[in-house]
Every structure is written in C-alpha cells, then in structure tokens.
Image 1 (cartoon, rainbow, N blue to C red):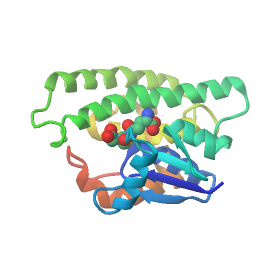
Image 2 (cartoon, helix red, strand yellow):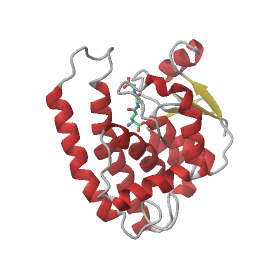
Image 3 (cartoon, rainbow, N blue to C red):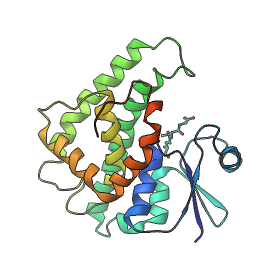
Length: 215
Ligand SMILES: N[C@@H](CCC(=O)N[C@@H](CS)C(=O)NCC(=O)O)C(=O)O
C-alpha cells in the first residue's frame, strides 16, 4: 500500500482519516490542498475526484472517496469484529456526520463570503434547531461510555472528534450536557486528535465565524 491523503489540515472530514492514520501509526503522504499554496496537489486531487469533496485517499493510484470508507480501508482495526458493536460504531459515525457535521457545515456556509453575502437566517435557525435535537440524544447515548461506541477508540471517535470540536464552536454545547462535554474533552485529549488540532492551528484565521480563544 502506498497511501496519499489529499485534504486540508483545517477540514473536519480530513481530520477523520488523519486521526485513524495517526491512531494506527500507518505511514502515508499528506497532500495539502489548502488555498493557493500547493496548486499541483489541488490539480491532481480534482483530476482524481472531480466532485471536489475532500478528503480523498489514493492507494497505489486507486482513488478512494468518503472519509468513513477511507478509514475502513486504511485502519480496519478501528471497526470491531463484534457485529453488534460494529453496528453501533457505524451508527455513531453516521450520526456525527449527518446530524452534527451537516448542520455545522450549513451554519459555516452561511458565513462564507464566497458562498453568500447575505446569510440565510432561516437556514441557520433550522441548523441550530437540528443541533439542539442531537445534543440531548448524544448525551443519553454516550452515558456510561468512555468512547463513542463503548470501551475502545473506533471509527465513531474519528467522526465524533471533529464533529464536536466544530459543533461547540458554532453552537455551544450547554453545561447541562455534562456527558457530551466530558466526551468532547476526552476525545480532544487523545494524542491522535490533539495532533490534528495542533496541525490545524495556523489555519484558525480561516474560520468564518471567528475561532474562539480555546481548544
Ligand atoms: N461525505 C464526505 C464529506 C466531505 C466534505 O463535505 N468535505 C468538505 C471539507 S470538510 C469539502 O469538501 N468542502 C468543499 C466543498 O464542498 O466544495 C466525506 O465523508 O468525505
């Protein structure tokens, strides 16, 4: 396997496979596609995946899209063999992407000048309402667990770390959700996660709502 990961160091979905690769000590080359810094990386990325959504993995010339599929490819150990636990892992991965990251991205998109000059307040309100529904669900689901799906660090945590990192920035997790906040702190302290957070620090000025002075 010769692995090249195309992505942006500040992108939540890029963090997912980066965390998995660091977690499993898997050698790979990072192909940064940030801004105008590396035009050759961006051109190669778009040639392999015209949709333009990152991350993209290229394994010996074969492109593999979608962060969760990339993780299953490079770090199968992060999906437990036990079928019931694996189902919970995949469920939490989908919940973090679809019900946390999607509304977070919707709020962020309304503040990106290259997308819109006039934020759609109704869309922002709907996205905040979606987060207000998922925070209590997660609070209950994560109760009694060290990691998102149980006792071991899995694909679900690779998704949970970036989703909750940015969710708290755009729609603060209230103190009432003590379990969720404690999980967020715990997962951010994990060395593989702390590493992606640190590598993204130089890019915080890009956060369109203004990065808070924490984390
Ligand atoms: N379902 C995709 C989502 C990827 C995604 O939304 N990536 C964002 C960056 S975090 C992106 O490509 N944004 C640029 C764009 O939408 O043009 C995955 O899991 O890989």
